[in-house]
Image (cartoon, rainbow, N blue to C red; front, side, top):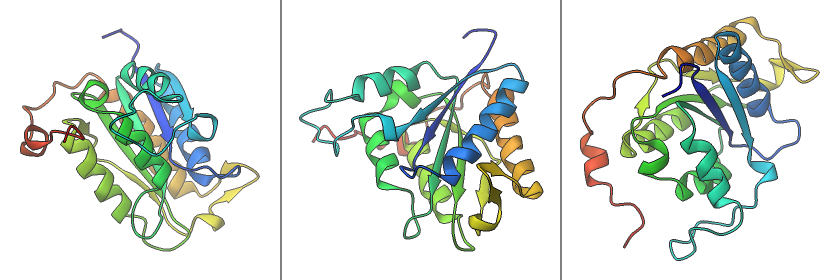
Length: 193
């Protein structure tokens, strides 16, 4: 592992003015302040078809996997859609597996128009654990997002602090000694059936 950790953020939103993208960039800025190199993966710019286990290398799937595989820490960010994470983030994660996430530090961020953006974080935590990733205990949730952003910036001080802490933890825990595989990961055979 390099002396300078590499932190990748995966934006689970396709909106041009995405609050998720703005928040993840804030976390990456903080990671850079802590000495990390960073990469914002904007899924708007990737060609990713709905995952088909018989066509794993279509479009930009291999490029996505390479970028994630380089990471010491990966931040997963999503808007809250119907109490879970976005379909584009699900598609991106479906193309990935143990090669991309096992023993990798993962941080979680969720943005919601309503008051309860926690459930998508729980769902993403389960996915990351199934891939034997080490999930940062701190997570960033931004409820009622429309009042917390202005002119392309995260302006709410409490939210800024939570998101900045996520970026800090992504650097601090980038080299954490991984735990033994969890039961979820040992039973996860992926989409080979």
